[in-house]
Image 1 (cartoon, helix red, strand yellow):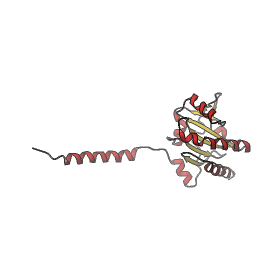
Image 2 (tube, rainbow, N blue to C red):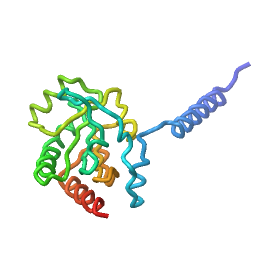
Image 3 (tube, rainbow, N blue to C red):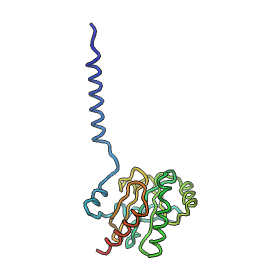
Image 4 (tube, one colour):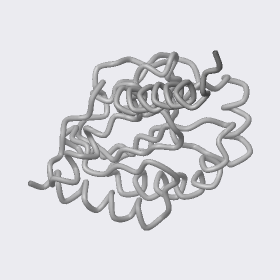
Length: 186
């Protein structure tokens, strides 16, 4: 009694397709809640505002709440991330402008990076903006960040007004900071 292989192959392929469909439905990519809100013209409150993260340079912690009243360019990054390296000069220039005007700061949040590698990266690229260590990526998870770099621009009232999932450039920063200034005036 010889069986045809066709029903067995069809059954295996059917199971594979069902498994892929289930995976596609249940697999969780980055959280797009903040991005969706901004696309709708909303400015959601920045998550994790009271989460205290250790300062990279030592000496205490920083919270987003402690920066309320200032524009914050929150950038999740790591020394092993090539796009993070490419965007670093734009972030430093934004820091220089925000500091000079007194409007705010760039705040780097390291993502699965060692202290030594982070400090070496900052020295190499002459970065002066403050950085916190997002140990266990707890803050990043509140923003839905799973890929680097990601940047969230927060206005002086603590609301996210712009998001970039991927490498930023000067145009994005200029527009986002201008939006944050205008938003705070409302």
